[in-house]
Amino acid sequence: MEHFPIPFGAIRSYQQGQMKVLHVNRSQPRTVVINGKKVSTAIYKEPVTGAVPVGKMTLEDDAQVDRRYHGGEYQAVYAYPVEHYPHWEKQLGVPSFPPGMFGENLTTQGLLETEICIGDILQAGEVVMQVTSARIPCSKLGHKLNKPDILKSFLQSGYSGFYLRVLKEGTISAGATVEITTRDPRQISVRELLGLHRLGEGTRERIEQVMQIEALAPIVRKDLVARLKKM
Image (tube, rainbow, N blue to C red; front, side, top):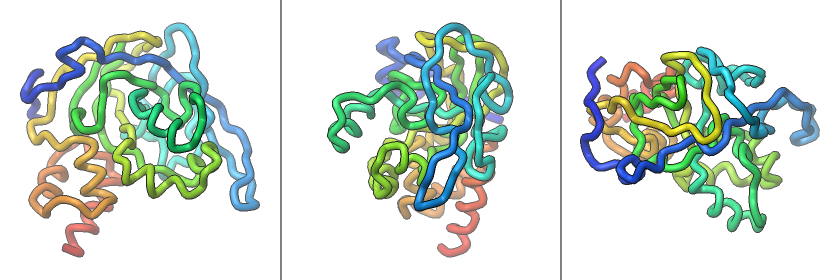
């Protein structure tokens, strides 16, 4: 698996030393009613203090209910940039959202989808993680935000956040500095992958390039294979 050391191409937030985990969030399942049906969900993440152990599949004492779309090796940890919070607060007319509002395990600073690439390897605290995919929202996010029709605009905004797999287990705490230790040479950002995967953007060549990234989440790889066949 070939990677380039930092940096190739500027990462503005990295250069400014502002890449951090602001909050570590987790939750246990709760039952909500969506479209008249009882649904179990663990999207109601809340910040915790102290060092939190992170295993290969998730954070200690954190739950992932629907394993078809969340969790597993390639979606063990979900990160969401705090920079997007003001956008959604304005869109939804809410003064402020608490950390974990988007169901993220890590509320981050300085890690934007336009700059972080699929296959990049990050270290936060003792934990080493690799970027695997953009987040595709489900109805549970719409329910939590009290706006069921937000899923389309969430995708189109490009403010998806991203999933990570855990390469080295350990503990992570709020305030931990994040370092990009290696970068994937193909330079396919999380935002570009979202376009290739769900927004009908990009070329066959770029899809074929992202398919070469070993870290790409299998669920995304399957969808891209289908898109290539249609092209």
